[in-house]
Length: 96
Image (cartoon, rainbow, N blue to C red; front, side, top):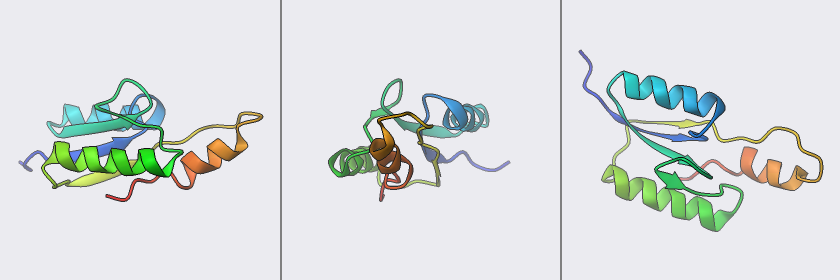
C-alpha cells in the first residue's frame, strides 16, 4: 500500500477541485484546500499578494513538504469580470 501524502488543491470548494480533494481524502491523503471560501486556506488567487500569502500558508501547514498539487482554481465566463477571470485562470497558480 502506498503511504498517504499531503496535497494542495486550489479551487477545492467546488467543481473539479472539490471532486479531486474528496477523492484524495478518500484514499487517505491529507489535503490542504485553497479557495475563496470553505477551505483550509482562504485566498483570492486573482491578486499577487493573496497568491503569495496562500503559498506561504500552504507551506506552513504542510511543514514545507507537499507530495503533489492539483491546480484546479478557475472561473467561468461572467460579463464584466473578464480581467478577474484571466487573473485567476492564468495567474492564479500559486508558486510554492
